[in-house]
Each structure stands twice: as C-alpha cells, then as structure tokens.
Image 1 (cartoon, rainbow, N blue to C red):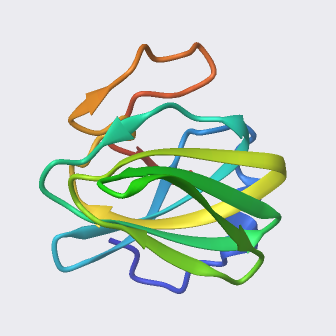
Image 2: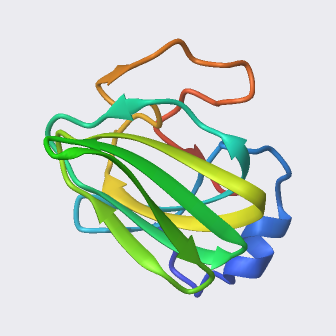
Image 3: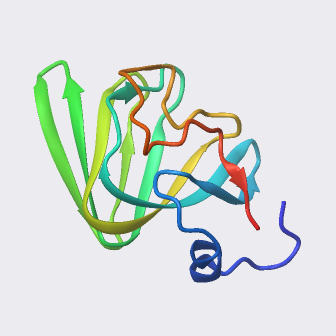
Length: 130
C-alpha cells in the first residue's frame, strides 16, 4: 500500500495498455485500480462480489443481463455505477476512457465465469503500479 499520496493522472500516464488495471492503493481488503479502456471487454460475472466503476475521463457503457432482460447503462465522466454480484455484464468504451475500479483483492478482471477472452483483454488480478 502506498505511504504517500498517489496522483491518478500520473498513475494513468505510467502505462498504455488497455483493459489492464494497475493497483494504486488498497482499502481494507479491497484494491483500488485504474485502467485505460476502449472498445469491448467481454461478458463475465463475479459470483461473490459487486464491481464498482468510476469514470475518470471518457464514457463507459455497461451492458447487463438481468432477470428482467438485457439493458445498457451509460456512464459519462465523473459517474459511478455498481454492478451487483451475480449479474452478467460487458463493459464497452466507445472512446478512450479512464476508469477507477474498487474490487476485493484478488478479483479477476474476467470474473468467475466468462466467455472466450479476446487478445486485447488482460486476465489479471491487477498489476502493481510502477
């Protein structure tokens, strides 16, 4: 865990990979991660945890498969949304977008169940910053 303040713009400037989150700090048993995203992620589900999204810059769309049917939420800059545990979802960014995620330490970027992972998606529990 960082012992000094972490600049989110500096953290984001330290890497260029898409869909490859960096851990900027921890809060109790949760990682605070930032990443660049553009294009589609993949359909996946986290069976035992919610997933928190904060859009720092750009725009994020999250398609959800819920009991009532499929819908998409749109998150403009400075918006937050939490995908409830057990809900299948697929993030998509129509433009280059930077997001912050809050997830339990060790949570995989592709969840517990998922479709085939495309080459541009990093399967990770988060990379250390730096």
